Image 1 (tube, rainbow, N blue to C red):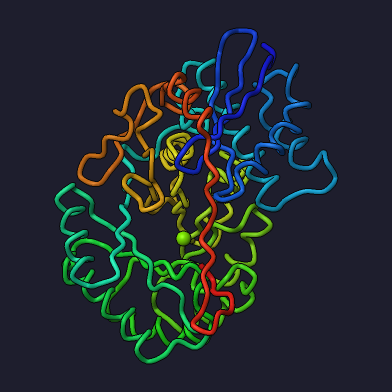
Image 2: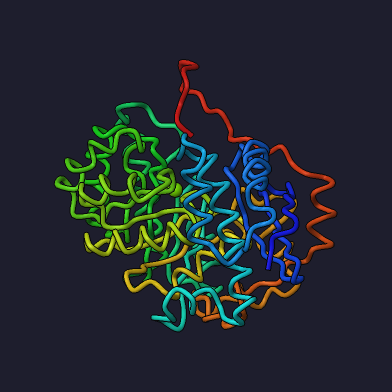
Length: 381
Ligand SMILES: [Mg+2]
């Protein structure tokens, strides 16, 4: 079997899909994207495709080595995400070729369902409570929320109080048996994070995510020591090598993104590395259906797995949502806040190719908002 063609599709709301075709007629799908830089990743995929066309798609590990390391310069979000999407598509082809779901090829299932969480926004505690009630009604047992918007480098007393009030409202709405995870999104300095973490601890968040920016990872050990809250990070880390210092620092939850951190191949290895530190896997996935399908395949084969992010109804999804490009939404029909194990071959989803080709003709130019502090200086988003 040989790879004959690789195409990319820029589809709303902010995604990029790739499609690998073989001379046997087997087709694999992947989602190589960096949110806000999709066109740049598309160009990287085009360059990597030069190597892959003509190759045997089943030599996934060898292709991963060449695609990741064969250009001499390596790593970073663009190249790692380009490799990630191609890697997902190769695993999809392998599963379809062998007639097995990807998780069977990764060693077989270690669980029968995967817990997923829903996003809730809402700037006001009352709005938040309403949104949480809707997600609880939909069966979810966990939600995630942003802690705050643009925040002063040293958060004011009012800013800190507002964070605590919102998380307290979430805890009230959820009760003691459901979970809330809180995403700091790198918007706090370590000094602010330390103070806010102390006040959030009695509210028992499942974890706090990106307590500081990835480039301040050297400050993680101090934060881990300062709080009983499990700390999570990793959506902006792209390889085992980048996870190692965070794991050594004592993070409790590793959050690689299947579409950023080298795909199924590398995230499977990151999960094993995390296991040696007693850390749990909770892959980042505010993305599309292929990234989620790839995440779930890893979750079914990973013992140290905690919970999966998913983007149904997330605030970014305008013009299209998680199910828009699926021929059959069944794989993402969650039951009691869990995705049931999917035994279909490959990634286990069927892409609506007509819808994808039509959406690509519209495309998108999604960009991250640029935030400013009250003095007009740049603020982390
Ligand atoms: Mg996050």
